[in-house]
Length: 361
Image (cartoon, rainbow, N blue to C red):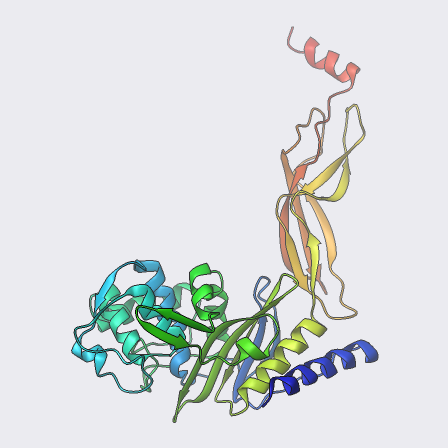
């Protein structure tokens, strides 16, 4: 489908949201799908998100994450016979050739090289089997409780599966890795004597797309994990067994950004509220957010702010002193909290200071 049609679909969806003043329903052709706001973790859309399914080459997101954590991009990797003759999609490695780990990761994420996955796994894990153990340990640490990995490339195996929700958890972790995003968002690169082009068409078709990974086997069908960023908000979409995945991801992202824009409820270093101060030269003090907090909100939704102080504030108070927390709720459920700091120093009243001095005599 031409890029212009994708843009037109997104614009029409956005206009529908703005003109009707209400959320517009979105749907996909996928057997399983999910759309998640990365920073808050809020699920904006889901369908059969907990169904265990084959995931094909989207597996390679986990392969890359483990390799970047445990390996060194400058390492030299010698390609084994097993890696060179791996079936399926390939970056066309030859037995005995030597490449850097970085080159292999480009081949892994751009060309979707099954051969690259095995070469990476053997080098970083000591063996493909050892690397797969690390993959499963990492998946559990990420909260992917309904996933199992049997290989580093996603070839079909009864012990190799995940869910749309678990793959979204993986994607949210992956986009926090700057090197992984740098590689996955590259359209074309020449490295290690090879020129490689990314299989992910969304990089050219979806505004703000920063990757992540395509996948396909005959049994799994088309699988796709993508992330897009606009105005500081990042969304992750996952579709499994979806014959119309390019269009579906376009629709999901446009829907998410249009219907659930991120609301910045707190900004680090900025005043959130004020609180009374006892026995001070001033009777109120600013409460400053110690961190930033944002939450995606649909039209009509509203975050409520509850200020919870650790104690009654009594002078003297020093600027920067922790004094409590700001708790944010949506429809009665807590969705986040940030620490509160005194925004300025508050000196005690003269009478109070004198009483304090007398108490030391």
